[in-house]
Length: 541
Image (cartoon, rainbow, N blue to C red; front, top):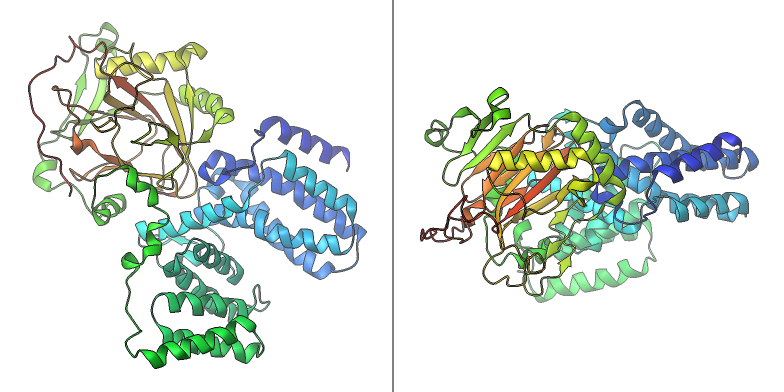
């Protein structure tokens, strides 16, 4: 390894947190993977010079990797803001690199194998869990934003071309990952796309027989036994002694004989597999209309015109001497419950500081189990978060003080600043910020009462997706760098306002950074006095 390679390794080891898991959950982690991949490419280049055997296959891998590296290095943020590029990056460093390692191993090049093993142990390197997470994220985006499979495979997101096209092997891997979690709907979609692309590839990137096997079984699981049998026969035409296919053919033929009504037209939403990814929703214990939530994320559903007509913009000073010189610019996003958007309330310098301090501390974001109060990871919240204290930096203290100016509330019982970065398709499905009555253990360790209010700072622009939506009231707040959204979670009576249930929509393109400041009841008694006002019945729309 020459001095240049050593310098690159030292630089990466200095910059990258020593973590080997869940890199797909935060865009900031994915950026580091490009450096990891760059070092691995150099390892393979040295190996190719030393080994003559199997050069063609290795060169083919190299061409794919170098092409993507050259594109990515022009603008790393732009490259990784596309979930398709992010997925293929993770795939290259998991499924594809497994094949490369096996190839090197056959030539017994111990030096190259040791180099790769060292990088995998000491650098941020994606795992099989990351590959599955990236694949599930793409299918989530596909469903939420109603993306056509063929368009997505062409690198298009809502008609905008962002990246190179997926290969048949890329599509196959998406289908295989869906199959692994029992999602046969998406298995079928991506295996069909893999088969279509395979027919157009000069150099086949995946075996047709493998595609047919997964495709046949996923179609069978959706109820179409006749088509599954037809595809299995095509597989047997290619490999006549295929053991599983021979057994499946007998089984499918028996199924057709015993029932002519076996074939069903099961819709995606009826398939039990569709609950795999969102099984964590059980913690909400409140139903919501998923179609409405997703429509809000797409912008297909908005506030009625007559409601929008009543919304205003204004300046606020709250009698604050400083604000008399530079009043807050406030936009009403909704009235009753009131949701306000404060413009230009967090500076670029403050955002830079917060990002820099949070990044090395990032951990997978968790949710609170309503029964035990324990924090757990969940499929319905995909992001990484960190907590920052006021005393750690002047900028953190300034943001906290400004939160008090925005809300007019006492900041003594507020939580630390939570910083969040969303990864590939990062999202947080509809949830409440306040603890409901049955959640008796929530915030117990704080001893400051319930979360009375939320201030959500947006620290990046998001080209597509990533909105904050309130399904109960059909309100949407789109992320805009430098703005902050503010709302009360509780009625003056102290009861939770169910209408404030909200969600972070999946990030379709871009990297979403936000920070939260949650304020609690203690210390607000004379600022927002308690009343006997009763909340309306919980909405379930």
